[in-house]
Image (tube, rainbow, N blue to C red):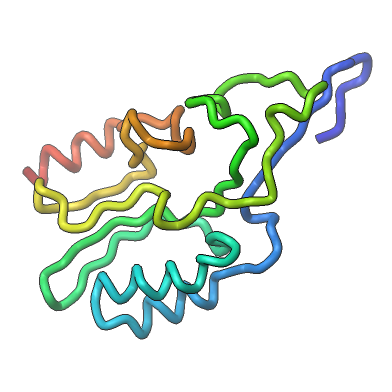
Length: 156
């Protein structure tokens, strides 16, 4: 991002979609050829284990013909050197490399996921899917929207 005139601050930006090694075709193959929810996750984890998930960003809700339902946040999320919770929600000092992103991505199985939740259903309106105790700060600024609260009310 270009600095504004007379602005001594430096800015950086990290987006997982800019990483090489796109996993989108493996993702589509897993969707089309998996036997069930568990097979889907096994295929996706195998395809992304060496370099992280590097495909299209999506909130995925899937079901199989065995009665399983699942949610997976599938988005390339770069790791930071400093893993302080909610760090990405702050303006950080760009004069140091302390807060830089690493070359690693958060593994797919460490991104928000739910299989057969106790409430018996899944919904998503681009609301926060991670718990308050998540290991990483992705989605930390998201909260349940009026849409997601209302959908949950109607389904219940």
